[in-house]
Image (cartoon, rainbow, N blue to C red; front, side, top):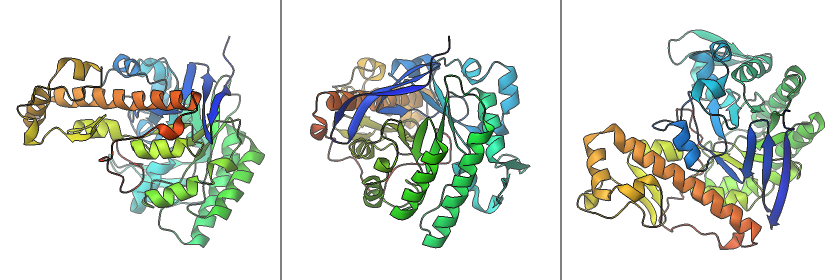
Length: 379
């Protein structure tokens, strides 16, 4: 029997919540961080290695997968879970953010968006209905509404036009997707940095009705202070008994601050992209393993981490691999970073459950300039 899609809050600490999101493919412990598997793979990782970090759910990308290998091909091969050998829940984004990032290569209309592939220049069209069809063909457990991700900065009149279009598209998504059976469709709140537009967006989404709700249109250049000022009110505009997902945000300090404001789910390419460029997240702060200071260091990357990288390899060895451009460098650093992020989420869940969320701190040298990392590229 297919499990019903449900969300249960188990503890609160101020506005922070911890709970369980149940899907047909299993449970997701919240607050949750979703590693990004853009093209049906978390780069430099096997899926069982990703599972071993503690991840309950992955994010895959509609835009990239529709271009190659194609959603219908994935469907014929048994769906995304079988295709990539990941049997836990998968969330697929709608393609809206990637289409927005194409800028000069796309044309937005009321019915759909026409755009050129970044791969070969071929013309494609993506509508709310087509996005739902593609995500269903992929076999997603959590489907995201097709929306227009409003750029920043933006004038109020253009932000309103963009938000209203996204709300009309949200209704079309809801009407077109059909029975969900253990899956969920999430509506996406828009409105840029304008409180009245976000309030209107929330009201329209609630009227339509969704299994979960996302806060969209942030981490697009507004800076951390502005982002957090929006999060001071935006999550509370959404239903308390449904999961709330902050799209594209994943810096550790942003995650902690957003959880304190009522957010339950996150995704970001930061831990994987950083792993490929020599950056590691540790209990003492960020480390650039390429720096010469690590060349003769026999210590582990993080003495407080029990991941395979820290258990078996020294900073000196990781420095050597990175300087040589060895593939193993990306593998080991990515694995460590994903363990760090999942350990952070576990610590947050425990803090909410014990009423100590205010005591969750991060190393002072973590870069806090800017907000989020909602990249259009691969994870």
